[in-house]
Length: 574
Image (spheres, rainbow, N blue to C red):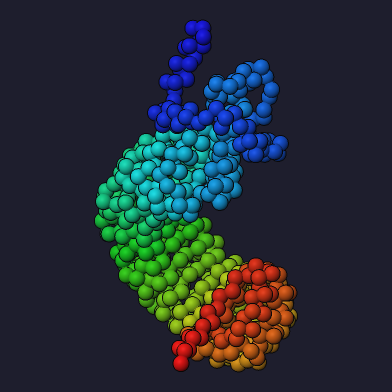
């Protein structure tokens, strides 16, 4: 070997990490026969279209390549094109071993029971994934504590835009490793670290202190990470670095008043923020007041989720006045917030100014029933697409007002009236305004005290094509519907060509037989080409009836949800 070749060899060794050297030593232990076998390269050789789409280099025969394949000589995977193909073969073999489909730009290994050894092996494969843009390792508990083995090689995937590490039991050491590696993925746009409870107790600073000015990060999700007040402070100090941020999700992290003050003090540094999620954060009336003062500085906001904050009752009265300063607001979710009558009336005062509003979720708030007529008069009904009103204690005036509003809800795609008893015997007035051009895709009427006549009106709407776009129909917990109602509905169910989910389950305490209407359902099923799930919980089926049903559904790959048949207990021998 001349001096030039010697110098190149030394440089190659210096560039390798200790992990690379260890893995090379392990590979050198393979016998000559094993290394000589070309089977892996042939088995996993990508097609011509794969090469063009994924940036995998083609093999070119050359004297140099032939020399490198001589017995006893090691193949340099980083420089030799044949080595690149063999490397891609290793990638495919690794991914397929985990039951996933390999893709050069999207590596999805969630729910794969990855071990620390798998993480080390994955790290050695990153040099062959230079085009990688999405990497999802979520829901792999054993990844925690071994992330540094992977982040040490992130420089090979500089095009990475999306990194998801949800529920991986990441530790503070993993946070340090990830923070130190952020410079290696300068194009990162989405970082999802949700459901990693080891981030709390002030450890989150290990990551935030590595954020750089003008970061490209657009989405940051930290759901249920048990962030402490110190962690929220660290995040607030980092927000000025995240001027491109468009989505921030801190749901299910307890936010004290002091934490809210620290957090909201920096929100003005994210003028491009479009989505803010603070669901289940223990927000109080005062917290909403603090939040309101900050929202005025982020006029680009489109989606606000403040749901499941049961102590927030009374806070909407002050927050509502700020909503008029958000001209692009499209969705507001405040379900299960114990809203008061004054809260809803405050929303009534500003609803006419929310001209871009498309989704309003006030479900599980008892005060909505009494104030709904006033609210419906001010909402921009012509563009509302989602209107959940389940468990809102709707009364007769509210039902009448909604029935009148149905004529103007031309874009409505989802309507949930579940757990409102007054819907029973009144379903006709909601369905009659629906025309064949209706866009409704989701209709939920669970536990609405529906009668046989109500279901007959539903059947009539199906027959005239008003529900032809329906994908989800929930009629569960309506045991007061007679057999004739179910039979009539299923006889016309073929009109629900787009239906994907159908639920007609009963309460556990009132099992009834399917025998009177099962033949009509069995006849309709072959025509429901889009059906994916059928729920018949707590209905009584005989063994023969269940076998007939399962035979038809198995051909269509439909999930059946129903009670297991009771196995008779063998009698003891006398």
